[in-house]
Image (cartoon, helix red, strand yellow):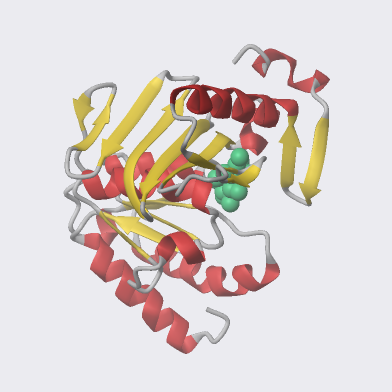
Length: 249
Ligand code: IPD
Ligand code: CA
Ligand code: CA
């Protein structure tokens, strides 16, 4: 937040055409990792900027999955919509997640079996039953292969729902599904740090998460569909029909 007014002075590196990294991303991640290491020296860490580090001689059964700044492109443009996302896996199963939006000071928390909260108030996904009343979040891929698969889905959602939002932080998109602000969300090619906390958040708020066509391996593939339990099966079926018609998907 301290640097948000000085984004023009930041040293920006490009990891790809639309993949930027700044000292903010790196600095935030190293602060987070330092804090975790102090409290839990035996835990392993997977951070977007620093990669995975396991502790020698430990079984590393606890893994912290960290995106120190989700929405870097928004941040660099002074758009006040970005977040910090941290998920915790224990023996490969997501157990805890937090997503924090510094500009609104919204803190989303979830623990397996204990529900999800926003600033300590219980979260619940929306009750929207029909696609034609649904507001759906998404992320537009820049990778050409993903785009070929994505565009027919975008067309379908544009033609059948009440609206689409591309807000620029996948972690917050999932938090919004958990909070019932969005009725659903889909995006292709996300990374574990974008979604680890958010997937648990949606599940613990009573929503469903999966691969685009309903498969379970979403953390590994990064092709994410999340929605309330009324809409999720409808969306998974529609995406699966689209994939059958369009070989790119
Ligand atoms: C990005 C954001 C964005 C999504 C991209 C992600 P980053 O994360 O979550 O919404 O569309 O796919 O890479 O790079 O800002 O941490
Ligand atoms: Ca991210
Ligand atoms: Ca990031």
